[in-house]
Amino acid sequence: FPSHDKGMGRATSNRILAVIVIAALVLSAVAALVSSFREEVKYSASSPEGVVQMYLTAIIEGKNDQAASYFAPDSTCDASDIDRAYVSETLRVNLVSTSIDGDSAYVKIDANTGASGPFDDGYTESHTYRLSKESGRWLIEGIPWPLWDCGTVNK
Image (tube, one colour):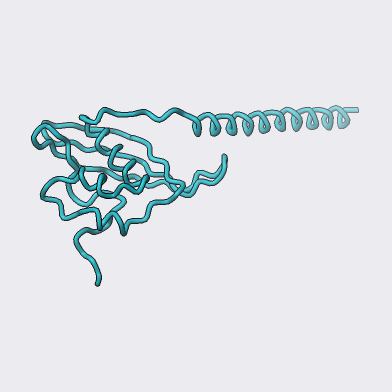
């Protein structure tokens, strides 16, 4: 009889494990669903994160001239550089952090692309935007993602 009891214990343990695994999968699916319907946070247009948000929103919406208006005056980037940039249709951007030191700021984001289902995380890459405050307005410095080069057009 001891071997019979051992088999019953194993079957019960397997059932409990199966219930735990199913519950974890259901909770993961619910969390993914809830996070996909989260309301977008709108940041102030006068903040560094708000400028980055408006820049990326303009690019996603194909408003490249508007996106270029967030570049600092000494930038080598313009709307034609944005015209050549690739942005995935499945792009999701999350603010990671903002650091402000006087008239300089850094905004770090995570860009997630390629996710096609509730359990597909896609590909995430981090990018940091450098901004400077000029005449009371935050502007993007350097070559900001999704750009990789600016001012070089092959003709």
